Length: 359
Image (cartoon, rainbow, N blue to C red; front, top):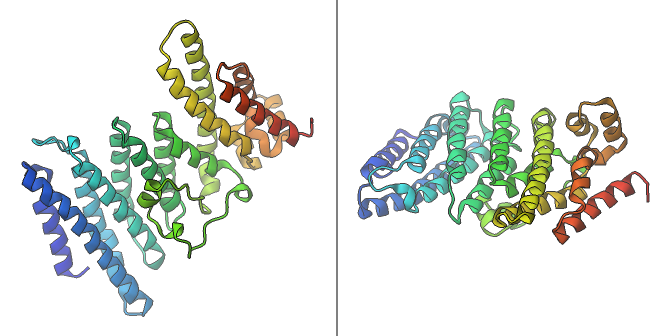
């Protein structure tokens, strides 16, 4: 950016987006408007530089400067605002959610520019720090918007960050770790879907939407708000990430099924039904994914138990090797008191049997 553009962004953040200055409703209203201005102004900078680069007018250097110098500053300011409580206790207002949405837009827009320029570690360090703190905030958020926000966050990681060809392997591993945290802490449905997508064979994945389609033009926030579940594009670092993703997926599903059975037994003895109902929803989701899940040999090797016989059984199951690794837990679920769970378990086992030509 030009010095004037950089100064404007710095002053905008310092005057209107510093949580310590937001002490009344007027300052809160100014902060809300400033977030809108921030997004629009940054997009104008990006579009102008991309247009200059396409014409050969040396826009790449200015774009690199924006991504490595200004974007880290914006990430830091917005992350502080998201996490800040202060006198007005901003976490009880909508401002932190708007700041989170602004951060999502800036990260998403910046990732789309990486094919046209180079960035250094300052950019990736800023993204890693901000995304880690956002994950911590989402884990502690218990209001009605928590599910939607976690869906936007996981979509940003899976559909923008991991598919970017310029994303370093260390950053990609950090992203998978954040998805794992969301799944483990009960923010799991979108992140769990992405874990399954990461582990399944590329041939089994849904085709990507055409670049000319209206859905492909939506941001991750807009797509999540519309309830769209876009297919995952090819991930360049997928093979390196499987060593983390495959064992994490199997362990999570195994523990989920075990917890559900324990909760169901407790409910039969007169315990609370609310937790068992929540567990049942997660179990149904996992079973629906298992019905159509097909994995390659690398995933089977990583997910199979340590015993030699178990590994041989999983390898013989081929594309259904991950289902074979979960066979003890699936068998334990078969007599579940939930008719939908029983039905889904039967379908999973029927798919396994058909693949093994046992029917």
